[in-house]
Amino acid sequence: MPTPGYTREIPQRYRLEANKCKNCGKISFPPRLVCPYCGARNFEPTKLSDTGKIVTFTTIRVAPGRYAAYVPYSIAIIELNDGVKITTQVVDCKPEDLEIGKAVRIIFRKMYPEGKTGIICYGYKAVLI
Amino acid sequence: MRDVYIIGVGMTKFGELWDKSLRDIFVESALSAMDDAGVDHIESMFVGSMTPGLFVGQEHIGALMADYLGAAPVPAVRVESACCSGGMALRLGFFEIASGNSDIVLVGGVEKMTDSADVTAALATAADQEYEVYHGITFPGLYALIARAHMARYGTTREQLASVSVKNHHNGSLNPRAQFQNEVTKEQVINATLIADPLTILDSSPVSDGAACAILVSEKYLKKPAVKIIGSGAATDRIALHQRDDITELRAVKVSAERAYRMAGIGPENIDFAEVHDCFSIAELCIIEELGFVEKGKSGPFIESGNTMLEGKIPVNTSGGLKAKGHPVGATGIAQVVEVVEQLKGTAGKRQLKNIHIGLTHNMGGSGASSVVHILKLVE
Image (cartoon, rainbow over all chains, first blue to last red; front, side, top):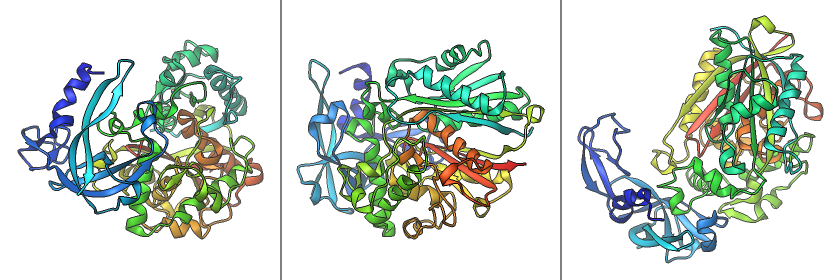
């Protein structure tokens, strides 16, 4: 449902907006108030790289309510080219196509319809390149 | 700090307890612990429970349980740290006695998971809702990500993962309170229904109801034989698995263990046996590495060659573990203590170990973002 919570996440889910620590240069995604690497509190806005590679992956065959109709679907931890890691679905391929180290691109996709009215939630997913 | 002793333990059978309520199972285990300890009063209580609000629509567990135990007006509070809520309740009870604030404390854990809730969704609240669960990950999925990475990095095999479930089901078959008291074979584990590749349903701990309690005392109420808590350590890690530098490392487990060993003044070589948080088969492999029982990356061959079996070098999960004994999440950390205390006192029946003096319990939350370790020693 497009609650305030959903709206707050739009910069990250739609545009991969992150922040970069002005002290140590490490990127945090989602943005944080305190750098988890050095403890500094000053950041500048940045955007994540939209390409990376598979670190590890699985295929989900039993899912909670919102994703139950989509099984089986594949999920991977992706290390983007800027070093940031994210968890995301890998789509437009078969589960057996996934391998550790394979290159992916991050794309904008529908996630699932929310609630009785079926309002569509969006976010990022990955495709093999 | 004052010394803290466990003088009594109790637990319900774990499983699908459809004829009993959340409060019933807690009180049953609390009375059983109080009877075992031979005490008729307590001065305060700590109750571990992960998410009774989602499972049965009930919060305010501390007051509810104190009321139905007939213990009001004692101070009572619920403790939550996902799947290690029970272990954290024990830790708070330990400090309650050690600090001198109370002389006799009840610590417990309880969860009622089989009533009606969307259990997968409820458990997933222990992960990062916005950056993991939003994308469709589940707990089996998170541990599958760890398993795949461990297999790729260290050559851990599908058979080695299965050997954890085979061992724990064997131990569970000797435990009358276990949810599953049947043996399974490696082939059955590997060929069972896939939940999140490469993990199957037989790599996964079940959905369970259950409760467990322990009575902690200071020297004032000490009755021997008792079990002394000689070490307690807790730690946290990045909540989202993907944010950790190394996906195969459970840093909170390593740090919590180091803290407990330091308090006890011993090392992993002094531990005779352990109950660890095998929510999925891969978890037991990673945990025994972080606890220092085996070198990083070598847990697969170590387990497969029998070192953690009842008759092995360091028996792990003699109770059947979460896999076979059951995993009512909030109760698990205390049920581990029940097993270690019974083993140390020599009342563990068919699965009784010989020549043991020091046992360890390890309980963790989420995909390892919180962890708590206790070291227990028999005092005769």
